[in-house]
Image (cartoon, rainbow, N blue to C red):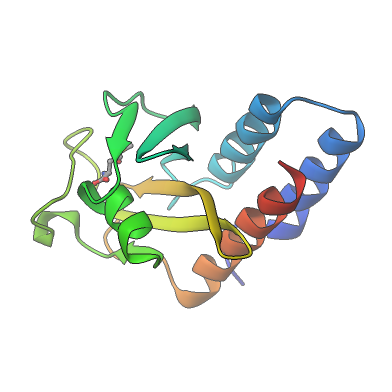
Length: 151
Ligand code: SME
């Protein structure tokens, strides 16, 4: 079983949508609920695509200086440029990694897609090395897919 209970997070998002909560609230709920799963989820960032920039619209966990990331830059920008989710077991091995702090060991970026359009991404930092199994990744993807419909 993955650490993240995706069904629980998706249910919370659907509830917020039904209460007509704002886009910002939905993104914040996603960040808070994913982080609440605990380790390996250390910090969760919701970057949304505005033209050629990823803009940080919600986060839970450690603050970051990277509130705006150009497409193609870092792990986050590479996900958008390549159209592929990024599962980085050891951030120290990645040349174009944008470091936010000294403790992060691994990172998972899952794109939020509506059809062929990339809306943004869920970016997760972990203090643990190589923690994101295929099951874990698919749990995060369920949340991303729910956001794509509800935002
Ligand atoms: N590490 C990311 C930058 C975002 S922070 O982790 C919040 C990257 O390399 O794109």
